Amino acid sequence: MRKLLVFAAAAAVAFGAGIASAADPIVIKFSHVVADNTPKGHGATLFKEMVEKKLAGKVKVEVYPNSQLFGDAKEMEALLLGDVQIIAPSLSKFEKFTKKLQVFDLPFLFDDVAAIDRFQAGAMGQTMLKSMADKGYTGLGYWHNGMKQMSANKELRLPGDAAGLKFRIQASTVLEEQFKALKANPQKMAFAEVYQALQTGVVDGQENTWSNIYTQKFFEVQKAFTETNHGVVDYMVVTNTKFWAGLPADIRTELEKIMKEVTTAVNKRADDDNADARKKIVDSGRTKIITLTAQEKAAWRDAMKPMWDKFAGDIGKDTIEGALAANAKKTN
Ligand code: LMR
Image (cartoon, rainbow, N blue to C red; front, side, top):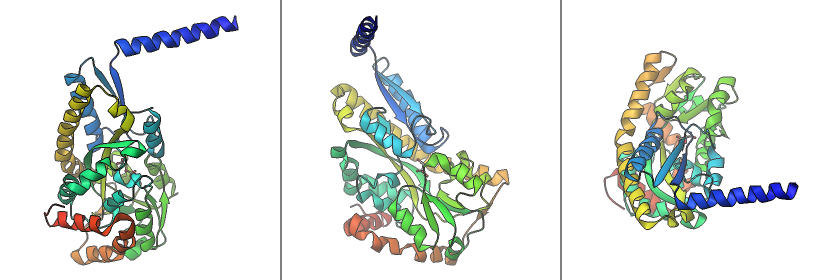
């Protein structure tokens, strides 16, 4: 009886596999950690819509938002294992695979998202997209979110106000050192755990974009937000190198074309998504937004800028200079 069952199961697997290769569409699972109503969420949805229109019957895209399928660290692993085919982690989360991307975490390095866009479009940014291909991650594009704001369960006006507080950070050594420079205590934590950690006092503060702060409801559990714009949350859309290389050439070409269009659309609306989220936070009346004077902002910059030298060896001086050139509207 047992033998018979094993045989039946094996036959079912073989039969299923046979059907899959003959007629079923290619399935792309796109997993991410944020809400649908964010720049990355919009991008994933638009990618699904466009693929299922232009490659109807050939490719199906399943989007899993909000760490529903995999959280931060797990999604990286899942991509290598083939459990998902596309993810778009924040650039802060790649340091295990390349130190170059740490350039995006350097506080007050890029003036704004437009400068980041210019840097990414240049030779350095484009080389970075392919720099992890041998480790299994192939970059398909950069998606913007926006500039980070800092918050805590007390008002932060000057860098000294952060001293002694616990801040949630992404898995990034640069961000860890950035908070240590403020004499604060950084704690690496998956994005999905932040709301509860803020609510229960496991951490006192955090840094993120308005769209993430709004959609994760961080504004409901923080006393004040300081409009520091001190750094950036941006994404690399990555796929599994082998999976991508194994796709039929015509399908891969079409997917790359669609990804390019989606990237343009995401990056065009990211600023609006954040402005919209900021407005909703103000309208909620649940928290306070502190606007810094030029002098106060300079104090934050002075406190954090030593990170540039500290990480110049790992990142490369030329890369940091490339970022500064992007501020000055020059290409690298
Ligand atoms: C975070 O972990 O704070 C963000 O990177 C989440 C995201 O993907 O925007």
